[in-house]
Length: 390
Image (cartoon, rainbow, N blue to C red; front, side, top):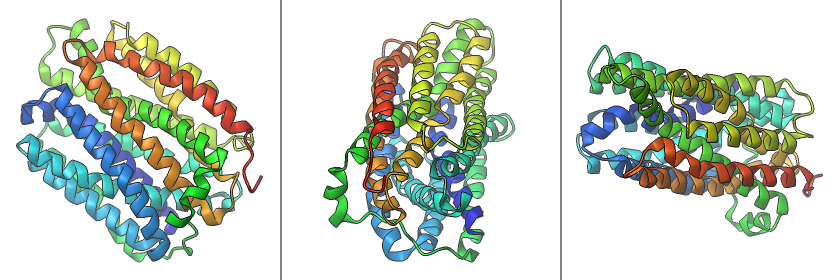
């Protein structure tokens, strides 16, 4: 049962990370806000995630997995219900902030439990890739369900369905029996871990990668709508919205496939730095082409290629980093590197929204290319650094 809860936790995290992007084309006109204001909602959510990542790490060490998982499912479901009924920017801002705490509860519970319960704890990068297939499933199903429901029912009812889905796993979380928590963010050890080169480089790798993933999760539908509207100017708005939201689903499916394939590579923990570097190079090329593409078909192909490229980056980075340390400090390591990584999600999607004012989301995506190049370099460095347990 604990394996199911771990997988459903990262599934819920995928829902959280794709939620705002999935509803963006309906939420912005509903709240009467522009791309910059929407970018602020994303930044508020991500900044809350950053703070929560540290707090949840402390709590999971004190209380164990169970209460954190339960809190995560309840908090995420509640925030989605509130967001379904928000009619103003100020009201919508509150659930976006609280959603960050729920998301990080699911994130920490899932991603520190997965390397322990899958593959008998012997291949953390493979376990992390396999477990995070379910993150991709959450990322995939959220825009797919929303694009379908938006055509069938009201905004409020469509979003409420997601709230029910988020709440449901709490029953399993209550009934599961968990291993003793080996992971927790110990504040007294934080400065010592920050002095570890592997932790510092891994944190910078995630800063670059999460900048990329969060930007795609939140701006891919808007990018898709721009390209689709340009290639088919006579299309109805609802049709464009649904097609743009499905672009995020294609991205998520590609991530699932890529992570499933990566989980089957026995040597991925050993050579993970090179896998991430290669993915960063492909990502840079794909993003550059996205900034100039003009057809709907090309946009769909590029979304798939981006998903495949991004797929192994996060779980492989986590697995490669974990392999350099002993399991008793996995949570402390994870809390630090993920918190630093989330700074990218706070800053970069908002910057893209600001660039899009007076321009387009498509052109603003060029901001992501340098992050791919830096990610490539840092990934190679991470793969060659040794840790205390190496």
